[in-house]
Image 1 (cartoon, one colour):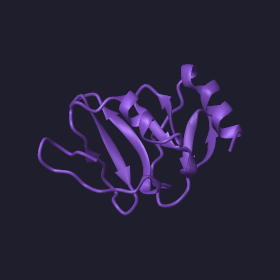
Image 2 (image 1 turned 45 degrees about the vertical axis):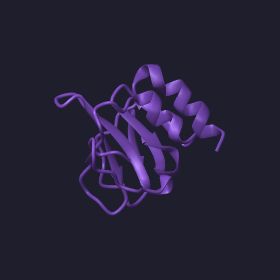
Image 3 (image 1 turned 90 degrees about the vertical axis):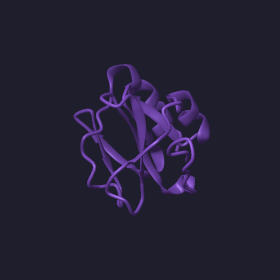
Image 4 (image 1 turned 180 degrees about the vertical axis):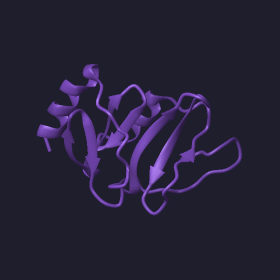
Length: 108
């Protein structure tokens, strides 16, 4: 993961729980196992780039891309995650993304 123009962090795909778009800063943040706060990614990172990293990543909202391996359930259009991401309760599933999420989740 490239954090800015000079810094980077080596992260295994299996340790990434989700990506969240910060609209105030206009960039993506990544939540990694073992860290409660997200890491800010380079401004040039797009949702298409993130989705291209691994087929386990699926966009569930304009502002959220999740790792399906950590998704335990969706109740009232809110995602609930397995540990170590069980503390995150703000991820909503958008109407436009719901059908694709159900299709991908049922293929697991």
